[in-house]
Amino acid sequence: MNLKNQSLTLFFIIAINALLLCAQTVKKLSEIPIRDPYIMPDKKSGHYYMYKSASVNTSGKVMGGVEAYKSRDLKNWEGPVQVFTVPDDNWITGAVWAPEVHTYNGKYYLFATLNSNIQWKKEQQGWPKYLFRGTQIFVSDHPDGPFLPYAKVPHTPMDQMALDGTLWVEEGRPYMIYCHEWVQVIDGTMVLVELSADLSAPAGDPLTLFHASAAGWSTGSSHDNIPVKSYVTDGCFLYRTKTGKLLMIWSSFMNGEYAIGIAESVTGKIHGPWVQQEKPLFTQNGGHGMIFRTFEGRLCMTFHRPNSPRGQERARIFELQDTGDTLQLLQELTL
Image (cartoon, rainbow, N blue to C red; front, top):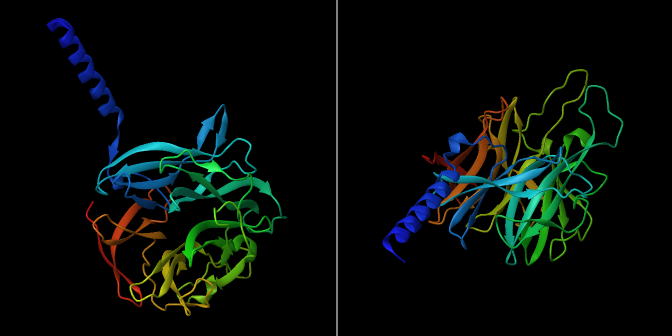
């Protein structure tokens, strides 16, 4: 190769690399609007993945979906990249809420709450419409997808308005814990269902763990033209402390503000019974939290704040202290 050709080749290599660099968008957390953030540390790639809802327009039809950002330091986030779009032949194809990606038996599992326009029960005056939603599980060999369905229907029961499913594995048996919507039952509940070994389907009957009103800090919400308060269950996530206690963080409303509380299994087992710790974990208009460890071993929780007004939500990351009996929020990470 002569000098002229070498120069041209080098020029094209530099130009292509420059274009690729420009195509990568790097953002700070404060620049990424997001509700219900979920951060998965992926040891294989050395990246943190953060998943969020992102619908897409496919041939004039809006389909639910999920996009991901990734980071090596929790400060600088590359993306987003679309990692999932609801299949066109799925029973529900609407917006995705609260996507979570769990590693289990060498694969990656997306737990996604899918929304529909199916009004399956007559609306009560003053209440939101009964639009069916449920949590469905999808599987992939990679954290950035593609995530494929097992079936065309949710894993949660077809007679329940359900959302925010999460994974817990105990004594080798996988379970999904999800929220049974206050819109249907007024006093929202946390529900447990065992899953098949490959997470392809439910493997047992649903079991109610507790009601939202069981927590003293969960003060409920009033509605116009409705004589009763409603109690929300949102954003469940499980954690075992250094002394073996099994805790669940979850969100509801406290005096009109979105908040995070802690439930504790008396037996240390997923079936409970469950009691509510008196002191909530966070009460300042933020919630739907999840817990992860950094690659350096720091215990952290991320959640969105503020909960309102809409459009202002951002992922916040706080360091957590595991006292053995409970969790305590420490300082927010400077990112």
